[in-house]
Image (cartoon, rainbow, N blue to C red; front, side, top):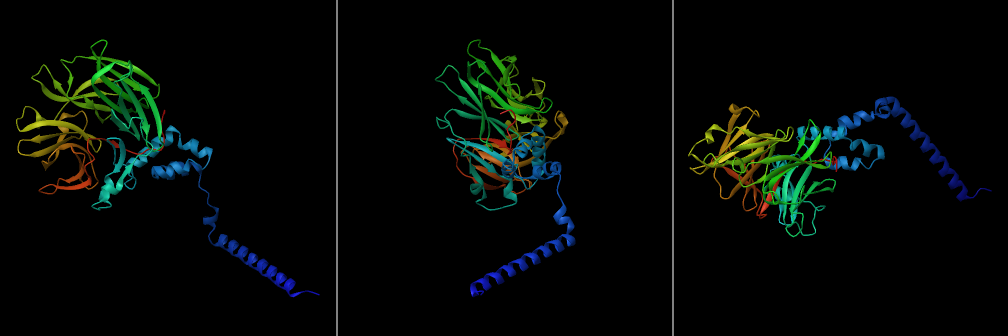
Length: 402
């Protein structure tokens, strides 16, 4: 005799079977109705060349964990170059960033996004602390050398050791370091330095120049990330070629640029470059407006939109910015804008899609200036970080040669 419990179980089993059959029929019908949805399978080559290369760096990093094959492909030099190219041309991926050193802390700021998210507090919200970067001495005697394709280069003075300087090349996204020693361990005083990429050699190069204690001569060395070795370029005559205030070179067209003083020509200032490709110093033309003019007090160099720029304060309280539109052609210097002078102007570090210019002040603030407004309108992004160092920065998922 069948109990009520058994009858319940039997009916339940029949209902489940019926539901499963109906669900299977729906799936079959769906396949016939939308065959392309169920049957399409993208080629792996298309996934990596056209899809993943267009994604933000954080998404790419997550895809490295999918499988060993995916990790291997994303780590290849070909994928690195493709992703960097896509990133530079994609307006929805944050490329116009700054890497900032402020006392013991390091930050990344995406300032270009302000045009798409115009909020008066955007800058403070978008200031990201780099948590993976710290030093045992809290960053004392650490200075920024440069940044290129997602790699950031540091120098660190060590006055209490036989080796005066250490150098570090770092990928903030991956948290990876390469440690490099001073080539001879005896640089002293002021240095010139810079960091960049040489496309003809597919190599990243660190340049260090300065006075060596043992010889009392100014030597220039370059370090190759590919070969992991220093190369001595030679010496330069301090009387003919004096780097004005030393410091970081401005990287444009695979060449580092400084303002230099021509000691034997009435201390006149001009622009000098070091070509990382052929490893030679060269003179670079400067705007004719700055030559022998009492109208301008001084001038500095910067990089904006991939072009070498020179800016100067004038005697009437303004600042003019000129851009070398075609590198190597002196007649292509073009006046970009003139803005009202502001207190403690430090330097310029780029511009947004809508033409606002990023300005650093000596008190450690970062502002966006609108040259089209009169008087010039300044929008505060980051306030009072103190004595800061700033380099332009682009995020990259992989660390070549590290």
